[in-house]
Image (cartoon, rainbow, N blue to C red; front, side, top):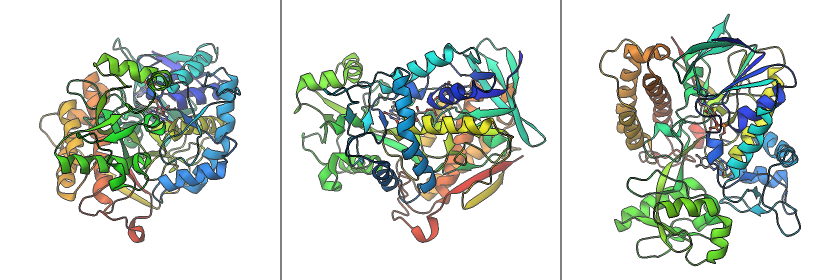
Length: 515
Ligand SMILES: Cc1cc2nc3c(=O)[nH]c(=O)nc-3n(C[C@H](O)[C@H](O)[C@H](O)COP(=O)(O)OP(=O)(O)OC[C@H]3O[C@@H](n4cnc5c(N)ncnc54)[C@H](O)[C@@H]3O)c2cc1C
């Protein structure tokens, strides 16, 4: 199946859909999604979307909180764009019919989340992403200039004369196709699924990052992986996220004796930034030799169940009562701060290739993302990328301070790992606590796996081969970056370099591969 469009969008989450809606004013858009078009990380987002809309808030205050969470690495110009343009795009969502919760006066009810200095999180109960995906998805579905092709996995990008001119894809039925387009947007989301323990769905294998890396696009800041502190931890159950909004509304972390413990480790207590909470939990579990829990039992049960119905239902399915029970929790991979390096208009280092949303890295989140800023990022930078895609293609000069060129590993033989083996290795060696020896060994193993001939040609392999290729490729880039950064900052923690080192590491670093 060969298709021609003016624009190709790979991914139907918030970034891809928002971009497609703008692009449809300028030409025909083909939008590929890996699974069912309604399936994306966007659809799983619970807590909400941040925007400086409250009477006590301002873009400056939102910028200050974003930069404080970012561990010194947030790119100020990107933060400025996010917080200034964010309110406009959130209002647009409301105009398009997004049913965010409202207070008694009819204004959007603003929730509180960790490390936000004021209430600024719009939410639709505890299923905000589903509501946003509904609004954007139905708008795109009814648009004659947007052709959404579900169950169509992009497998590789085309380059013509050094510029991106579209992509190959394969459908669930095994039919192969090719889309030719003047400009291509990678909006394939994050890669939480490279880790065994994750809040992300199985489609979050970082395909877009792996594809862009293969054509030599610069990949920035991948060492910064956010581990969410409170994923439900029950044997045999998926790591369902227990949103930060629960703690924003008063939930507490307690140890096995029921004692709150966060103040012992962090002055901001339960509402400290995610990386600090996650590491404090590990310290408490190590100290007591027992699990830790989230509890809302001290709050009004009617409020808890009314405010968090979807989370309450998910808990009930595994036999837990959100309003009364102690919920066993532990950290799990949640969000990638790094990704395909872009400028403020979604341009990458390859002409004609754009990226937005979690697959991209403008540097806006620095070393750690502030809660509820990623939906906003997808909205704002998706729309900006769409505007830039309508102009003549050119590569961006970009900004990372260091670029490391490396060959795509090749030439080794040996067995190909299963997805489970790769994900377990990543969790053990490149998870919350990292150190040199394990990282070195992991980088070597991943290199050998990429080098195995079949993984070097993922496009011709089975669906499982392609999946393993993405996991191995993105895992390798994450592990390399984590090994290189000999300090601890934001979400990246090295037990052998536990301090932040501004003298040597206050910079963004990109990898660029060549074949
Ligand atoms: C459980 C959970 C809760 C969250 N809660 C919040 C929250 O409250 N607030 C917040 O701001 N953020 C939250 N996040 C993060 C946020 O949801 C994501 O960062 C954001 O939705 C990413 O949007 P995106 O458009 O970049 O990608 P996604 O929404 O992940 O969409 C990616 C799209 O790309 C497609 N795709 C992937 N690979 C391919 C391929 N090879 N070919 C074709 N299509 C492909 C997928 O099918 C999908 O359509 C949460 C994340 C999770 C997992």
